[in-house]
Length: 251
Image (cartoon, rainbow, N blue to C red; front, side, top):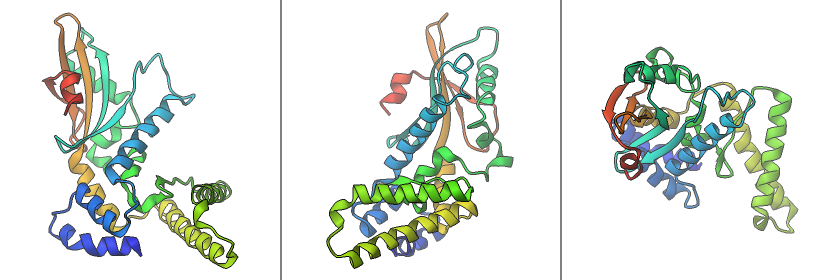
C-alpha cells in the first residue's frame, strides 16, 4: 500500500520527466516516516558491494592495488563510483592508461557500453526501494532452497529487530509476520523474474543521468593529479581533467 501511494504521488511528475531521487525520498518519507533515505541506502549498499568483492577469493590484490568506492555528491548532484591513488604509467597516454584499468574491472565496464546498458548493476540495487526489506536490500539467487533459507533468515532478523512490536496476542503476531512474509515473497518474485516496476524505471532513468565513474591518477614526475571520467553508455574513452582528490572529497 505504501508503494502504491508513493507511485500515485510521483507518477504525474515522472510523466513529465520532473522527478529526482531526492524528490522520491521526500515522497517516501510521507508514506513511511521511518524509511531510510534512498540516497544514503544506495551509497551504503554500493560501498558494501565493493568491499565484499575486495574480500572475495577471486579478487587479485596484485592486479588491483585498490578498488572502487561510492559517493553521492549533493553539490554536484552526481553518484560517483571512483578509484583513487593510481600512479601513472609514463609509457602510456593517460586516456589509454585509464581505459586499460577500467577494462580490467568486469564489475563496472559493461555499464560504459550502451549495448549492455539494460543490464542490472548489483552495486546500484540499494536505490531500488521495491527491493527493501527491514531497511536493507534483499538479493536472491534463483535457487529455490537457498532463496527460501534467505527468506527464513530475513524473517528471523525482522523478529529480532522488531521484537518490541510483538505482544502476547498470538493472532496479531501471526498477522504481522504474514504481512512481512508477503513483502518478501513479492520481492522474491520480482527479483527472480527480473521484472521492473514503474518506480524502478523512474529510479533507473535518474541513475543513468547521475552515475559517473572516476579514476584518480597521480603523475609523480610532475606532481600533478588527474581524474579520468566516464558516463554510462558513452564508451571506454574517458574525459581527462586536472583534479585533486581533495577537491572531489569536499564536493
